[in-house]
Length: 173
Image (cartoon, rainbow, N blue to C red; front, top):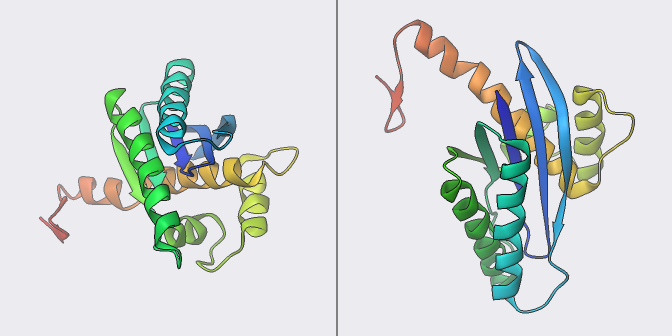
């Protein structure tokens, strides 16, 4: 399975692509879509086009994106939400299933501590994927989102399936 992780941002959107091979997580690619400022509609188009190009290049099977957290600055939160919406739209238009995770979930899955800082996330992403260096912060966050999705897909969902159970409306069925 190939997973595309996205860390949305109105100025810098990180992406990370990993392959899941059995119990192994293998690094494929990562980087950032930089919008260089400018009016928000132009930045949204850059995000849409950038993600479409990444999907075309790496052909992921699934995608995961970090949820927006409510910031002290409402205008910044709204802009971030619009950037996230553009990323989700690009993934949906590409026909990918989209899962979302909170920053807390990502930090918990990657570092083991939901209150870890960006440096800790980067170091643990480097360790999990056996990289020679720490990725740029937004790319590391996106790889963390992909790793979180791989962990969630491989854990509880498979165990529930083994017992012919699923989760519907937040309850086991």
